Amino acid sequence: MATRAKEPHSPAHPTVTAPAPTPTGRSRASAKGEQTRARLIAAARTLLAGDTVERFTTRNVAALCGISHGMCHYHFKDRTDLVVAVVEDIRPEWITPLEEAVDAPGTFAERSARVIGFLTQPEGADLAHLHSALHWHALNDERVRVSLEAEYRRWRACFVRLFQVLADERGGGLDPRPLGEAVAAAVDGLAAVQSLDAEVDAETVLRTLVRALAAGA
Image (cartoon, rainbow, N blue to C red; front, side, top):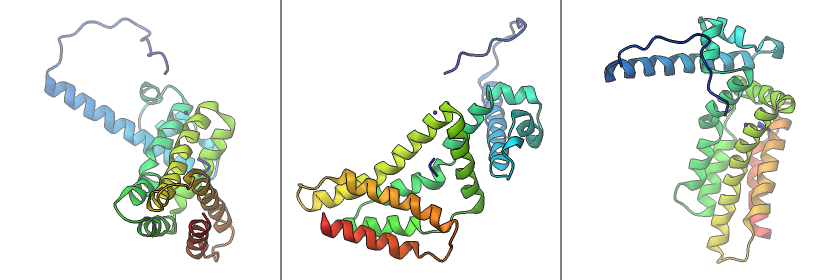
C-alpha cells in the first residue's frame, strides 16, 4: 500500500427536549451506533476492494449495508470520511503486526527474522485490492492522501527502529534512518513486482538485503 474536523452536523429541525436516558440506555444506543458504523466500514471495504471505483458512493455503501442513505451520512459526512475510516480500519492488518515484530524483545537478527517472516506471508486478495483503491483515492483526494501518508510514515518508522536496534548493539556511529528507509522502499517495490510475478522469492531477496545493509553499515 502506497498507502488524512469537520463542524458538527446541525439538525434541520429543532428537537424536543426529552428526559435524560439512563446509563443503560446510553450504553445500548452507543453500542448500536458503533455496530452500525462498523457495518458501514465493512461495506465500504467490500466496495473499495471491488473492480469498479465508480460504484463506491455513500448511497451504494448504505444499500449494501442495508440501512438508509441518511443513516450513512449520520455516521460519515461524505465519501472521503468513509475512505479515511477504511485507512484506519486496515491498520491492524499490515502495520500493527509489523510494529509488534520490531518492538518485541530480541536481538537485531531475531527481530529482522520476525519482520521478514511477517512481510513474506501471503497477502489476501481483498487487502491487496484495498491498497490499490486507497492509492487511487489518495491521488484524487487531499484528505485521503494525508491520512494514507501518515500510515506510511508509521510503516517506515518500523524499519528505522529495527536498524536502531543494530545501531545500539554496535554502540552508536550508525544512522538507522537511511537503512530503514531503504528496506521500506524495497518492501513496497517487491509487493509491486510480486503482483505481476508470483515466482519472485521475496523472502530470499529481503533477507539478502537486510544482511547486506547490516554488514556494510
